[in-house]
Image 1 (spheres, rainbow, N blue to C red):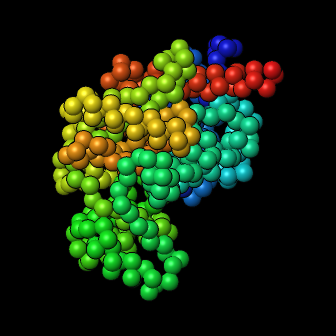
Image 2 (cartoon, rainbow, N blue to C red):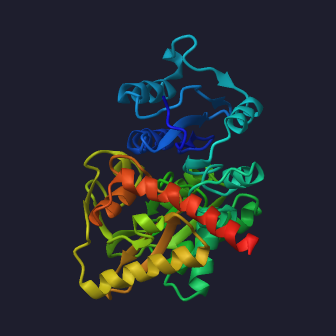
Amino acid sequence: MVAAFQRKVALLCGGPSAEYVVSLTSARCVAHALDRHRYRIRVFCIQEDGNWVCPEEEWTAATYPSRIEKLFDLLDNPEYCPSGFFKIRTPEEGLRRLCEWAPHAALPIMHGAYGEDGRLQGLLDFLSIPYAGSGVLASALAMDKRRTTSFLGAHGIRVPRHLVLRSSAPRPHRDDQLAGAGGMLGWPLVVKPCSCGSSIATTIAHDAEELYRGVTRAFEVDDEVLLEELITGTEVTCAVLDLAEGFGGRLVCPPTEIHPTTGPLFDFDNKYRPGGAEEITPARLPEPVLQRIQTVAEKAHDLIGCFGMSRSDLIVPEDGMPVFLELNTIPGMTPTSLLPQGAAALGISMSAMLTGLIEGVFESLIERTAREGG
């Protein structure tokens, strides 16, 4: 029998974005790590075409890990799903089932467009379903690399020189921008979609030909493309956590140093292939530099308005002054992901971190109710 005090938590995953597969990998790890003694868990997976998978099964302490594995194996390969194991539902049906189940909280593990850019958060706000992580405004801002860079640069955070190409701009204007990019930013330079994570379609251009190819590829996944000067130095990442008070409260994790094993770029393959990068926590940098990294990551977290979790990526050049690159509001939770590594360096397991995030939602609700009642 399920204890009456167990709260219901909806694990939201998938999503119609280029990061669908990464989201499922993260959600699989999260599903295993969630405390099934404390919560009743149900998965709601939005597929790449926008339809939903809403298995009726609730996962509790009595659920065998093999059941979790089976579901995610079939979500990865739905063509092999046995009849009746789950049913593909329209978005309307999926939303109705989510509302009927009435979760006490949602845990969005959806990377990229629709899941990490504020749209899912706005939907949950509209449905009055509390959720872990940042709200609409912070999510939307952090997802837009160009606006994040400009905003944080205006607040004194060191950022790369950059320019933006828009697919809607007249072709002659874009051609002029491309022709002048090398002179303005210097070679080589970095090409990346403005609103896409996991380093998808991110390349380094050493000349005009590589720049054209990189921009063409980036425009395949986004309508805006960011060109940045290439900052050389030590690549690092630093996570900030807002957990419930009983789980540590505000924590700034030790920075992690990253060295890709193939090529100079910490790209999609190096991020998600086991052994794709050497990751050292804490980073092998002087203590004052580590403190500067943590200060920048926490300042970016607060300026953008993040809540629950964020992970900032930075470069530390020879002068030891960190350069901010981007911020993720729903960082990866895969076996090779950096947020869990940062938490582990503080002695916090994946399970404890997730519980702290979820309990932080309930803590915030209690505080808000007390304020409104007062």
